[in-house]
Image 1 (spheres, helix red, strand yellow):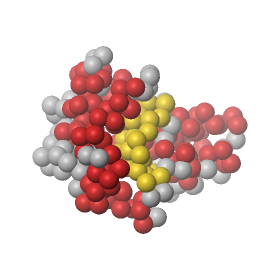
Image 2 (tube, protein in one colour):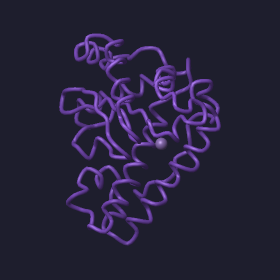
Image 3 (cartoon, rainbow, N blue to C red):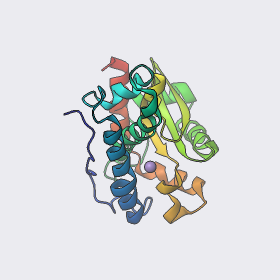
Image 4 (cartoon, protein in one colour):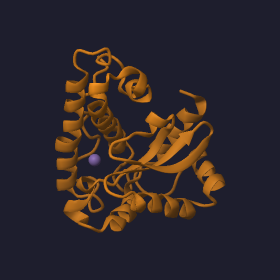
Length: 209
Ligand code: MN
């Protein structure tokens, strides 16, 4: 019942063009993401994790996961969780995607980082500076927000943080269109960030839900 499933995109594969291309979205969603989900389900089959919510497994990973399953659960469970939110963290440009932060989140970004531009600069540095594969994040930690990055498919929820905005900087997320130019991909990403959704997540993080 709580088994992760491949959730369909809420927009067309080509809806994030020209910032993120259709072919990348097809391969990324239908192949990479789907593989994390199926490998996670294989890893937890027949264990007590099978019927636990994915975020609970990831948050309490150390206590719950047998040693021989740790790597598979961490990598594939993290991958499944990171991606399902990543699709929702984006929206077509002009249809929820792009522009500036809204609501209470806009105030928190201003008070924490000084300005939206200063926030973007720090976030881009985290995304550019992540060596190899991983993610850049805006997370809530208690009442605060901060920028972090994680290697591989590690999720902020493994570290007691709630991911608000995440950017996948694995090469599979951008290489077809941007090749080695990760900074251009990061710059393009701002055009499709679904700020109303990020603000909603921020609201949930502050109310403890
Ligand atoms: Mn990915």
